Amino acid sequence: MSSPSSSASDRTQSIDAVGDTAVREPVRTSGGSASSAVSAPAAGSGTGSGRQAKLRVQRVDPLSVLKLAFLLSVAAGIAGVVLIAVLWMILNGMGVFSSINEMVLGLLPQGKEFDLMDYVGFSRVLSLSIVISFINILLLTALATLAAFLYNICAGLVGGVRQTLTDD
Image (cartoon, rainbow, N blue to C red; front, side, top):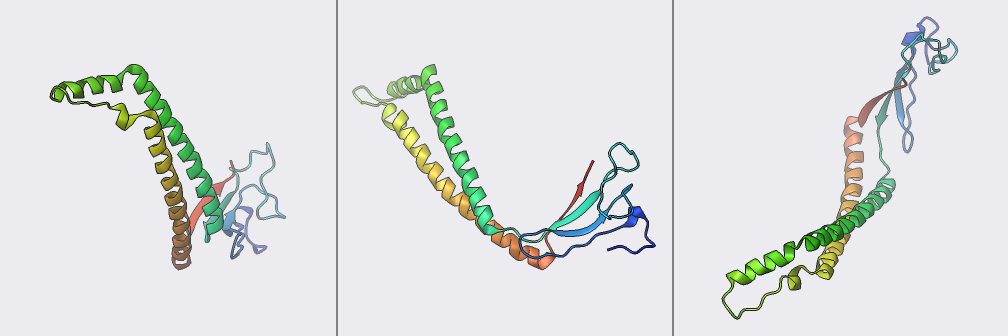
């Protein structure tokens, strides 16, 4: 840990771990007690600015990334389908589709039949939205899991991402 000759503000703690735990690098405290290198200053003592922890993310569990990415992409897919349904209803209520249909009928020669709702009807648009959301769920889940594997490989080469956390 720290030598007896070091001051309270220079104390460091280093914990090396592999797997699911984080790696702690030097932890500097200011105003902490003399018995612990990572103790927080007493509440209301006003002697320090808090403690800092320098952490390094060495490994990300691909299974947890897979689960989280799946849940987030399902939520985004549901939100996307609801968004498309609401947007279609708003546009239909404003008469946008009927205006476009009248404009296209005016451009076509006499006797030609055209109905825009055959192409952009509510059921068609909603079905297409659901299919695209399902594909996005699969792709986002797979890409996030692949990114976790690639991060683990790169972190093994360069040591991972370092973060400094402070306790204010």
